[in-house]
Amino acid sequence: MTDNASFRKSSHSEGAANCVEIAPAAPHSTLIRDTKAPAHGHLAIDAGAWSFLVTFLKA
Image 1 (spheres, rainbow, N blue to C red):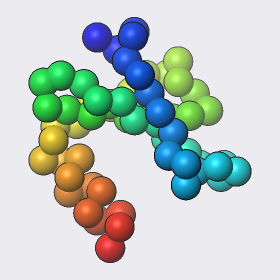
Image 2: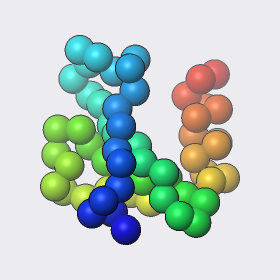
Image 3: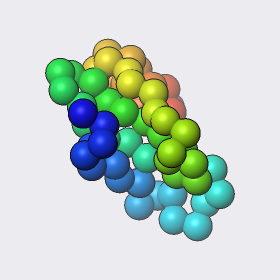
């Protein structure tokens, strides 16, 4: 599943040193990985946790 996941980095991250990439995953989850170390793996979080995280970070 993650070998062909389409990870993307936010356009707000350009030039920043501490970035993460995200990719949608089925069913109803999001994958998160370190941009500088993609080979080190990823975190998979469910839709509820992802929604909470995004809301928290935007606050």
